[in-house]
Image (cartoon, rainbow, N blue to C red; front, side):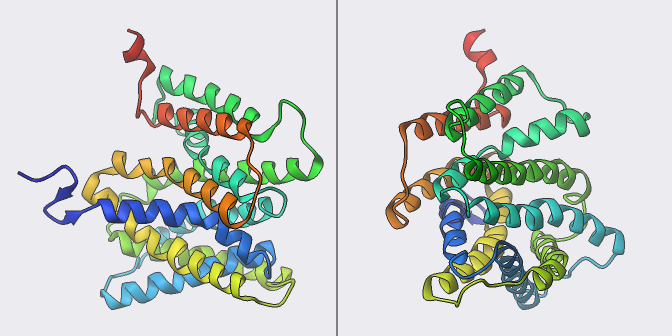
Amino acid sequence: MTSRFTSSKGSWVPGFIALGIVWGSSFLFIKWGLLSLTSIGVAFLRGLIGGLTLLLFALATRTRLPNKLIHWFHLAVVALFLNAIPSYLFAVGETHVTSVMAGLLNATTPLMTVIVITFAFREQKINRDQGIGVLIGFIGIAILTGAISGLHGSDLKGIAALLLATFCYGISMPYSKRFVAPLPYSSTALAAGQVIASATLLAPFAMLGGLTHAPWNGKSITGMLALGAVGTGFAYIWNYRNVRLAGSAVASTVTYITPVVATVLGIWLLKEPFKISQLFGGALVLLSAALVQKKISLSKKFS
């Protein structure tokens, strides 16, 4: 009998843990990258390094890349909303707020996805539990960000950038499900095409806006290599592998690990402050994510 942690193709657990750690560490790596790079520089270079990494992997495995213009168009749309814009906005956000805040707000992605589906992709219906999850999510955001007690201008700008980034994620998810997931290519090919498209879209803005604002140092180099090659490169391969081996429902639960990793690293390595209100607000955001992703059901518990 096969263990629930394995399949005929191998165990998904190591890749799942690695993905949670890598994506949770991304907020630290962005902070390090910002020591030397501009926000657009961080966004462009993570896409360029990630795209080259995936392209080399595709060549090494003799993976066929997309070969139709319409397929590249759909990949470019996903790249715009899943990579290019959010990468820039997360870098902007982290120039104003902590990496801990960024990691916790990243967990609002399922909430934003449900909101987009409600208005733009109505064939993908939401149920009552998901509606309750949306309400809980907004309460969690208010507590987490301190919106109830009032926000300063700089904090407000950073939080707005982070929430807009996760809203872009919300657009990309249902669009990808409708137009990209059915394409006749391997997950490696789709990931490589997507990240390459992201770097291409950002290149003109990076050239105009400038890449750096200070000399490179050890932390900024380490941060960008890790963020690009691992966080924006191999992480996509691990994610697709997790989906194949464990299923999309299990693979999606990595979103509950990343805020914890981001918080621990932010407090430990960046010495960032952490408030009880962030703990409570973050817990509500994660509860919201569980409801909108149908991991738990209030209807069943109280019926």
